[in-house]
Length: 106
Image (cartoon, rainbow, N blue to C red; front, side, top):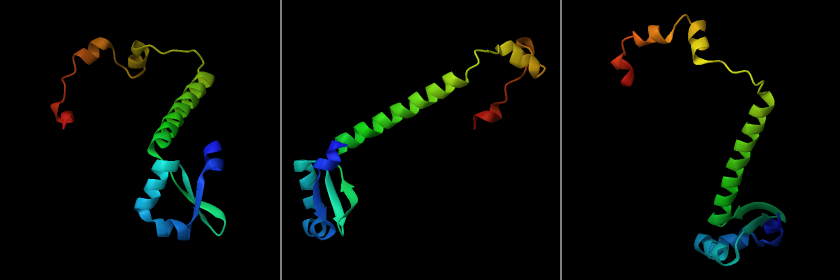
């Protein structure tokens, strides 16, 4: 990810000196700011727009993965509603005669 390589880095001490308002100003001006401790990257302050975009891409990837899994597992066999009812000993007509239970609406 190029943004990580191009990010402005601040030590924890520098970030503390800048304060929250200063860090926010840095992010608004420069984009991603990475915080380091003893030379190791430990945190990042990220602008909202790329974070929102990343969240949307992650959701799209989850949907794609689910579609791929479903496609791979799909045998093509379909079960009709009438077959499901018959498996449980019912028909459409027998269900039509069942009185609705208003207590389930709570």
